[in-house]
Length: 153
Image 1 (tube, rainbow, N blue to C red):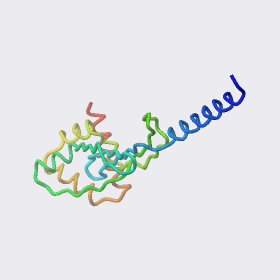
Image 2: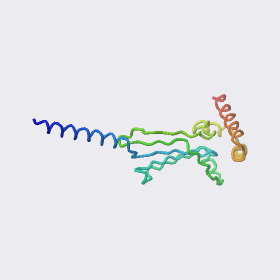
Image 3: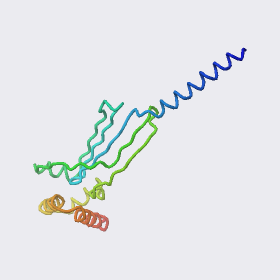
Image 4: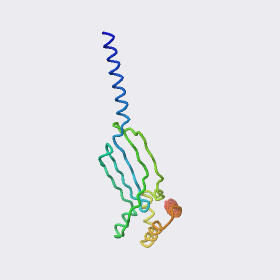
């Protein structure tokens, strides 16, 4: 084999490695998840190639279901809680986390357990207090609800 052929192979191999490295650093898919600060519903969105929104998933919460069952109007207050960028192999290139809303303390099962302990009037009062409170008051409200559920179990 000639020296020139070996050099060409080495150059082709080096270029291939560089191309593979670059391709593996490209974002193919990004994912974002939001949570409603007032009812605890969540939504997840996948975006492919920064162009196509796919795989939109929505998960309502026990409080939102209760509001819908009682035909009460609710406007979501979406807060971004997590986002990530993935390459062609679905390896995470980067991720970021936002501060989850305080309702995150009462994830689905805990919220459901808490609502079961309340009357219709108490649930209405609970929801109105969520909507009309400051962030610290809201945190205290959910922390007390969480404590109530955990001491019941």
